[in-house]
Amino acid sequence: MSFLERLLSHIIKDQPIALRDTANWIRRRLDELVSVFDGVENVYLVGCGDSYFVAIYGALLFEKFTNLQAQAFESYEFWKYKSNIWDKSVLVAISASGRTSKTIEAAKYAKKKGLKILAVTNDALSPLARILDLCIETQVTKPFGPPSATSTTAMLSLNMLTRELGGVRIGSAESLIKWIESNMRTLLAQASKDAEMLVKKSYAYLVGAGPGFVSALFGGAKLREAAWLHSIPFEAEEFSHYGMISIDQGDIVFLNAFKGESISKMRALSEALNSIKAKPVILTNDTETRWSGRVVELPQMDEFNIAIIATIYYQILAIETARKKKLPVIGFRYSKILSQLIGYYE
Image (cartoon, rainbow, N blue to C red; front, side):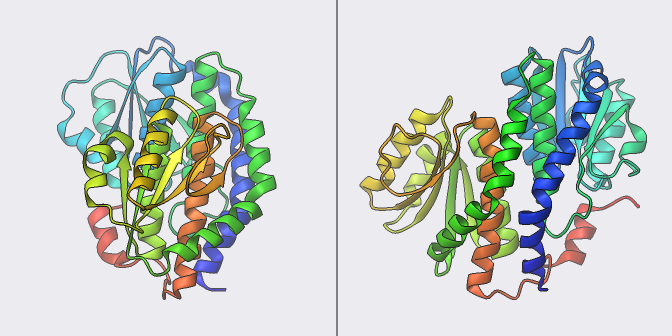
């Protein structure tokens, strides 16, 4: 089985199992996890790469569902530049491997400052897990290829935790997982069809706001990793200021138009793109709007749950684009050089 086929199998078959197992793990430990935040007023979330995107997602969740202030930082930026640390804070350190050197250094730095530390990792025996107060262990049994299930399980973990902290029913996790379990083949068919548009393209834009921006970041990263595409993620308002300037007729723009705080902004962007004859692809659960463009229909859930589904769609889209382009993808490009740059603890 080729690298891309193994990666697709991991996303389609293993990811739903990992999400369910992670949800069950979280449910069994919710009281212990919630207790970490006793007396806490502020949360810092750090990560690198995909884990940084999870940190941004987590900060939005904390701000939306709890009374805690939250900030997301790239691990290196927190470690090197964050000198004003608030009292009564928790650091949430996110690293799938638990070996990312900059995230471990950020955790060590936070510990010296007297912060509580909660890790989100797929390896409870990792160097990161050994220096913290408590660990959320995502349940991906055999991680493979560019981060996929380790990212969505980390997103789900923070989704469930923040809803519990805010007194919001966490039953939405069950409906989310059931939908994913039942619709992976539907997502595959949709993404495979949409990948046809990207075969002869050298670049694509991805736009969203709030949780939709997180999905855009993931989409851009996956298209770069697997499809070697010049993919450009934009926050919706920044796209209005700068992204539209470079758009030509026929350019493909993926809009994460999830029902929520920013749906009116996404409608306006869709209309603007159609007026210049671009080709928007709209990922949406908004059935009230008559969208002009290619529509990827999403279920009636809140925008934080939809962001996880959209991230899975982009994972599949990137692989299907690479397969249709017949790219010789056998793993990470320049992996040795990148590993040296990133640095990993043994």
